[in-house]
Length: 369
Image 1 (cartoon, rainbow, N blue to C red):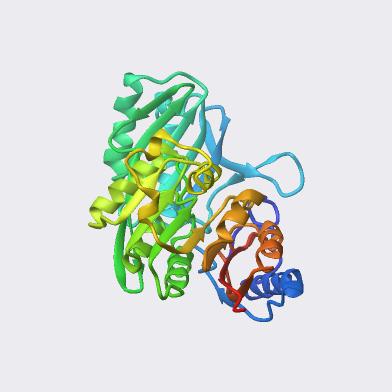
Image 2: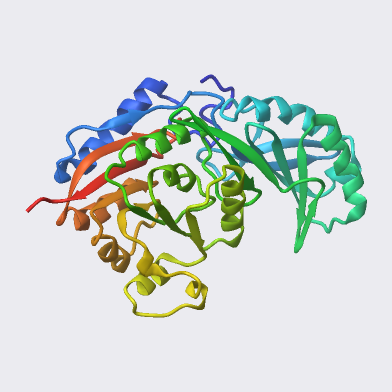
């Protein structure tokens, strides 16, 4: 990837290395980190090295009547003006300049705008505009012109205010093992930022399912993995604490005609207590947990990894599929799990080229006595 802001913009930490060199550096880091756990080989799934990121956020810097996209500099606590960004998908890259120019000419849209967030999908781009002023229906008229001009969806946000002009979500199509899946991704909710690598992650995870009964999924989000997994299990029980993510997941199930998933708005700790019959929850009054015969558990936790009690709980399953966004906490959790489990497969996924970030995947099966 070529970028005029390399070495100055703090978004890219590995700008001095070619993409091939970046991958080698990440592979060496994983080899060294997991060597004590006898991980001798692993698959590597790479990304396009440019136009791969379908989510992006830019500060807005005002200079009189002019405005600029801005990011933090690498070392100093200063901003660098961004003229273009070859990391974002082409739909966003092609939109950035004409959108900025139109906003610049409109006092209502420009005044006290401090950030713009982009969310792109296979069908549309959603643009969220964040303000240090109150916005109301008079703002809507000006924002509608942006929607009409560029064929996008626009949302305005200010303190305790959210203005939705048409939609506050996008529909995205992913292809997993040659099967298309449609997803509803709501603005502000978590979604995978690199669709190219996301498809590889889902394919890798689903291809490791065999002798399946029912699946328990923890941290399911908007159903990114859940919906493709549903094709391989009798029933799926999935948990997530975000109300909007669960609503998106249910809408996506309807679009994909999936009917064997039950979503619970519960934390992992709460579900662990419920399945162990330590506590009763009103949210489970219509669900009989004894109806499930789980053969697999799938976990995709936040950077902090899995808490000790939940680790002990998932140790009762035969097969664990673990997707991690933090190699350090993954290693910590595996040090506990490998007392009972054997690592059957390991993979890394380069969702974030030009950074040190690494996603990992591990398949664990109980050791044969």
